[in-house]
Length: 55
Image (cartoon, rainbow, N blue to C red):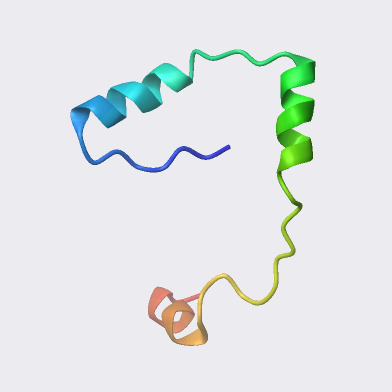
């Protein structure tokens, strides 16, 4: 799971500490069951932004 950006040192420390967590199979299954699958639709960026990026 992505961790959002930190806006303060305490948040950065908390986010860094999260990398040390270890989840077992049961915990991972519970998280997976709680998260609805995403249905991605459309382009990631609008055409105007893609043109500015040269993509």
